Length: 148
Image (tube, rainbow, N blue to C red):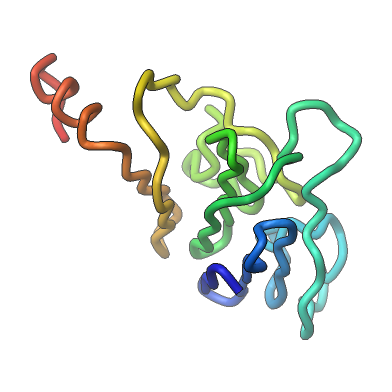
């Protein structure tokens, strides 16, 4: 196992090779990324999250990081792409709206940072994602008048 993450009432693990993510627990909002499986009753045992659906642009490469928030989850693949599933209330999924998604969807509005890497991703219980980016970006952002 490479990583484990716990949300308010759901959990996830990432296998050592990054080839699969497993999730279980409350899935009422799709936060496990399992589609409709367990939507009414939850999933009392680990289920494999589909990382290679037929829709282009989904998480198809090796996964490097996972995180579980109150009612949503985040996945980062080896290409640095960010994917989200679960409750979209207050824009928690980063998709520019409040829609919920039961499967992983790409977060397409994450800025492309040249020479910066997305490193551990953390969700907090209130539903907002905290993404730590390489220090070089923080330094450039601070000099441009933005907060860090």
